[in-house]
Image: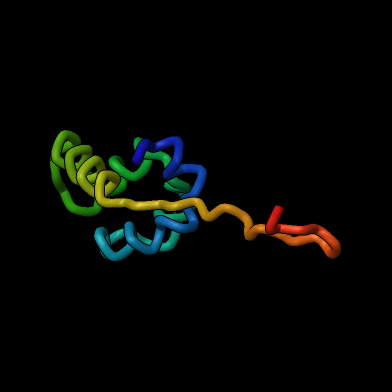
Length: 84
């Protein structure tokens, strides 16, 4: 999944990220807001790892995400025939 999608649906993916990087604080998560560079910086800082490693972890995590946008339910209007 690309980072534009992640940023747009951050509330849906934040739980998974929190599980992955438990050392990040609530303030960190609020600041990150789905932005890759913010996430990488916070991972690097909290875990004391090189930026390249933090980027690798963030990219690996993003590849595991699955989002299926559900289509709105089909609506039937009164008097509409569906067997035509």
